[in-house]
Amino acid sequence: MLDMAILGLLEGQELHGYEIRRQLRDTLGLLANVSFGSLYPALARLEAAGDVEAVEAAGGPVPPVPPTGSLSGEWAVLRSRRPPRSRGRRSRKVYRITDRGRRTFTELLAGGGADDARSFGLRLAFARHLPPPARLALLERRRAQLVQRLSEVDGARSEVPLDVYARSVVEHTAEGVARDISWLDRLIEAERGAERAAGGRAGGRAVGRPAMAGERTEGR
Amino acid sequence: MLDMAILGLLEGQELHGYEIRRQLRDTLGLLANVSFGSLYPALARLEAAGDVEAVEAAGGPVPPVPPTGSLSGEWAVLRSRRPPRSRGRRSRKVYRITDRGRRTFTELLAGGGADDARSFGLRLAFARHLPPPARLALLERRRAQLVQRLSEVDGARSEVPLDVYARSVVEHTAEGVARDISWLDRLIEAERGAERAAGGRAGGRAVGRPAMAGERTEGR
DNA sequence: GTCATCATGTAAGCCGTTACATGATTGC
DNA sequence: GCAATCATGTAACGGCTTACATGATGAC
Image 1 (cartoon, rainbow over the protein chains, first blue to last red):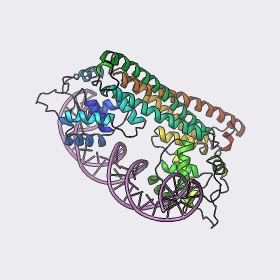
Image 2: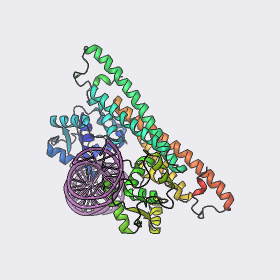
Image 3: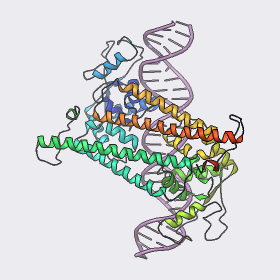
Image 4: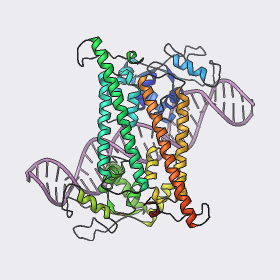
């Protein structure tokens, strides 16, 4: 799961470990507080596997902002006004995703495995990199899981009398699940709408392989 | 955390491992799918530590429903109509909580440690066993955490432009946190109301040690 | 007689954590 | 020169999962 998050962030920008952690914590919210003790070994593992590679710093004082890195540049300015060059750093190992890494990433994204709230959230956050049918499948798989869980909880609720506190927890949880389901419903509907529109443009074929989409969904 | 859940269930009813798992999954919903591979070792650990003890089955064919076990009896009837006596079982080791276990339990319940959603939910579900001030402290600690997290997320949200999917995840998460906070607000208010009422009855003292409450909150 | 369910347990491994060690740079 | 921040890494451990092994009992 950490691997997926790292590769996902690296799609589109080159980053070093410390910065990956910040983005994980600040901008995604998911996976808050990944510790360095798991992050650095993960990066080393990914590098050994050939999914990422360290980019040569070329000797110059400031290599951090690469081709696609418009994001990095922006928050660098927004954060406490600091001169964007030469800040407190040590060796700073900047990583770039490889083609192999991109393949690994899409496999991880689409790859089965029961997804709990966290890994589903992560997958959905990177859903832009998924072909539309896989996106729909992801949403519907999660929806089915939640529906089943809700029915189980509802079924069990009537059997045993709980005290105020336990009941409050159970009910709050059930409401949360219901809320998640209707959120998913909205997403699924939006997804279907987009697919219909794109399908009409691209031709009548049903599921084929709609070429990865990506930016097309951005401006919706 | 598993220990706390087990001890909490064992407060008030004697149970065997298999049954503990069911109650964890069905009635609490929290800690869904605790596997036997972690449950049985946990029980063994607790027994070794003297927090629980195996109750002697006395040789009779059906020991399962003990003094306090009114609940077990009920669902036994409700579940697929089965004759309540002598069902498919092996040796069936039934556990009972000890006095030491009760102490351990309250320590675990009140005991600090950053509580995430799961352990907070578990603590609150068993909050009946907590003295009212500790209950309030638990709620307010959690509330403070959520408020802080929400402000962090809100702060970071404006810095980086996210695509539709990532944005949807972040916003949905933020809404969820806000919802949790207002839930906590309702609980805190209810708690304060109960404390005022009880305080008025018991005397003017502010925090003393209100004798564990327990059943008093049940009928609210 | 064999399948499903109830029931307990062990072993290996994954994924993450905390704690520790190190080092460069900036600001006071 | 000292603390704070940025930066990378190692070591030990914890908790939970999967997979495996075993065995009793009732239903078909």
